[in-house]
Length: 453
Ligand SMILES: Nc1nc2c(ncn2[C@@H]2O[C@H](COP(=O)(O)OP(=O)(O)OP(=O)(O)O)[C@@H](O)[C@H]2O)c(=O)[nH]1
Ligand SMILES: [Mg+2]
Image: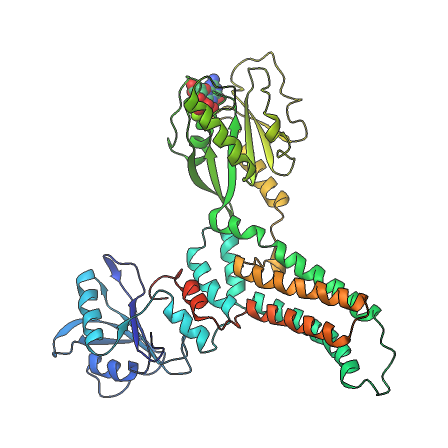
């Protein structure tokens, strides 16, 4: 793959649409623009101009708006051309074939963004944010991706690097000028600063926990005894008959997953097999899977039948239900009851509802939203930074070096040794924003992108 090739791709989805967008990047753009529009003069840069599209044999294929971007003034920093033809797959096919005949090659997924990164227009965390913006499924993930595209992670890394450079400068003064009349080397200063820096790195690493929440949604498991109304609940929340509801206990045996939006959050809801001592081997397998699933979830809706005695939950899962991640749903309040559910998971909020008569559903949704909003403590505003797995690996390496530096200072080892560790931590910070020499790693990263981005 040559970075000097002129690349072309359809940037809009394949299929019929009012308009489509074909994007080109590379040195052939100015010459192609003149040839396909039949214009003698170059288009005014960054200005929409209605042009004809004339193919290599002189036939008019379509007409549409063209926008040309100059070298050093485009997304990729190369000369670019955007063509907006009619959104007919047949026209698109012909235009792409013509552009290839004129010397372009089809772009790889993410290749435009890769060029923007290689040409210094974006740091790597910003390039990753481009893909995140396209894939974001909730307002929160969109906000995090937007901030990242604006350089939030890059700014954070520069701030950490500056702080570390300050500590390094102080230490290096003693290495470079041991004989000079420098003030007494005090370990309290650098150690204190280093400890603070490690705390800052730790809280950034912790944000990685939200990465899966952003991508897949908040994993919410519906738990309860057979017939409590778990499948009725998923159907009501999703707003369609997603799962089979019947009065036969043990109806649901496998997981049923659906997604809902709860204001800003994307929530993955999983209906499960009712928890009890099953006679049937298949049902028992379903129950075991439920127990496994419970261990890896973010949020729990524990549903009880208000008209029945409180169920007993298996010991293995009791400890996961906490005030901040669990709502107890007392279902079937349309039925008379001689039992109280007050003492069942008494530390968690209870929501009385009837899925049959649709009572209490709005209150349940807002209680759920409230808990997710507080309990999950998603970073907000200026702190809305969420690191992905790649950033986290780099920061963890940086953290290890900081700890080693701290130990070296503590043991009063040579300042040179401390400085080596601090430099390696700076290396870790810079890897987050893209000092990556490894081509294979870049290939893997940009493969996740759409073609044409
Ligand atoms: N009266 C009343 N019946 C309800 C209510 N919610 C659900 N049901 C009934 O309770 C029965 C069981 O409902 P499901 O939603 O299938 O229960 P489940 O927990 O998924 O059951 P399993 O999959 O067998 O574990 C069905 O007959 C529902 O119509 C309610 O609020 N009031
Ligand atoms: Mg069910």
